[in-house]
Image (cartoon, rainbow, N blue to C red; front, side):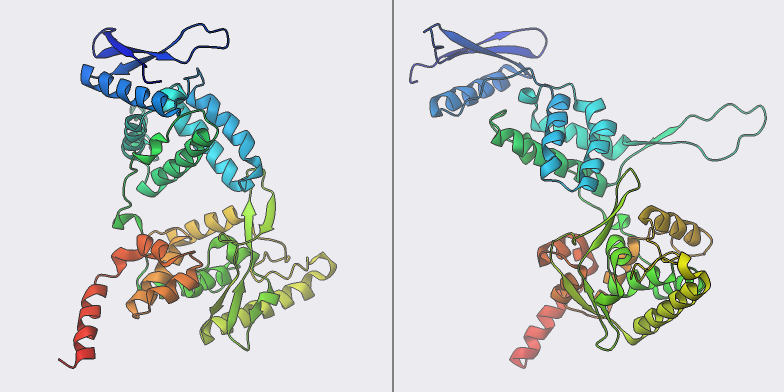
Length: 396
């Protein structure tokens, strides 16, 4: 369409309507396309040039009145076949709580990187409401809730969701390109990763020893396994003689409190060597379960799980998280989440000078780059040690 033309006219303050010719319809009738551009006339001209180039290349997609919120609802429905149930539930919660109230009314076709960038910044600065917990004295006015930002990691999850959904919108020929490609979520800061030092680990382990969830805490610190992997671990995957654990599955919990055991996050099994102390704790756990089985008799549920409730049944992941949070709140240590025990494990390995490839394999990451992206800031002396080894190799 070498004769494709377009025009621009003002539509108010900082708004411009661009008009362009499209291919004639089946009856030979002339068709035109319209789009409103917010910004300067130069911005409008730039957008018009983009559209004309797309028409010329045969890549132009006519705009629809489909809003982002409506598209995401359809996308979630189609995603039933490709997403894990828990992931889909998490995505639905993010869409309902954050995305739709903020940018859901924007037409999918008019969604731009700037919309997403503003959304990410807004969520990072004011993403959640924190209600006051301090009790009021009689006669005091009711304190106003304060807004607080979501963590950079959480906002990055929002970006992952949007990028995935909008990539499908491109594949389905609903939009010409993915606006999330040019939007950048905030970088995760070092302060967001909390880890325990050696003294704090000792305090935690001493306090947790008589607790029913002691073995879960021990495994998290000594192996770096994820919560779901620990709760799905069966005795048949533990080799006490060889001092190894085979991680082959993960326990997942849906909003309906339904528990299911599925494959690992990467879909691959991994073998983790364990220490003698960890072996000792596992033997104590096996003895504890045998005693519970003897006491409860037929009421005891034989699940074969390493970490179980006193009656042998599965541990609900959220209950473990809550119990751990309460446990930590009573100790004079860094207030961490259960997942931070995994970070603590990594920090200990790095402090011991362990190679990043070994760490990556223990964690079950699909590549070393993921490990470095997550924990690279914990390797402050990595480059210097490499330089020193180079000198040693040359005998300087």
